[in-house]
Length: 434
Image 1 (tube, rainbow, N blue to C red):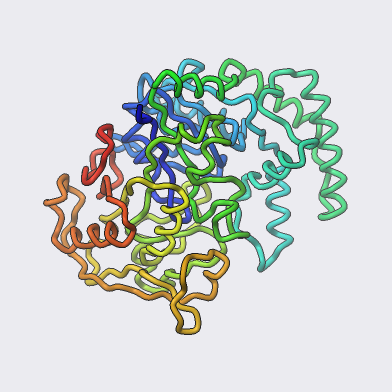
Image 2 (cartoon, rainbow, N blue to C red):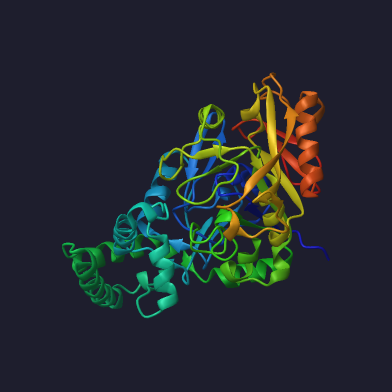
């Protein structure tokens, strides 16, 4: 029997529009599970003129009868989660143990992780990585270190938690004092706040791996929601300018506690252009009027940080690479409307080093490559009202078709605006897009 599951993953440097795609598919699923990343992700969903910016809570929370799972692979910030839950409730969204389950095995982002993230970036000076300073990297580092980590399930046992937190804060204080000369953090205050978060979240904390494995075995449809984009994958991205988890579809089994066969059909989300936040190589970047125009028209400012994003032409060398190792079955093309009004649009179809074509794709070489571009005619029509592929200008149709040809995957859906209904169903094999 073919899997009814679907995995939604970004194929660029994040900010591809995964939230809108997950929201479109979530209504036909029983579970929506975040399997990687943390509050450094920002998945905005626009519904009936309202924008919901989701960071830790899965995008299925806006649908009735969907159980949302924060799985074990997530770096879980209880402070952000509690704030996000209260904000959703204040806007009339139901959030509780009946529709939100948090893995007891997820690792907790602590206040000292955020401080360490910020201090480390400052210490690197011009060589900084460009993190969101949300403590994600230090949290995953402690996860690998084991003896200095705290998991979500530990938040529930108040007495043991307080003792462990005070001990760990003492270790971190000595480390930060030696490296950065900082004032000590208050271990008791941090322990008290963690215990309170544990009390508030306790009804939702559980063994999510068992829940998801049972769902898969029973044939209940599960949507696995990725964070960031595959070019930021800790193993396969532009290291060291990456995030600290496996964010592609490759990360689903370990990050959610399910078998590889549970991944299902993989939808790779790409923008009609490219953007990235922070430092690192970006071959198609347009640090000029074109880049500025894309940024302003696409509102390219970080959902999590508010930082302006670097913008440039669509890099299909990178997309082909990430689609291949992510096992992508079809593409979801977002923000095509942003390119409206340009006389011509360009696609990067190859790389050169010292004038010679680059064979294959090695992320470590991206700082040295020059781009080979294919130029296509632009279109002037505002396409936000288009609901069928045939409604698009011929030039926009040609742009989409060229993407399909060069990537070797069908474009299943096309986003022509931020609202849920501004979506064109194209060559998808998923019946659940609405």
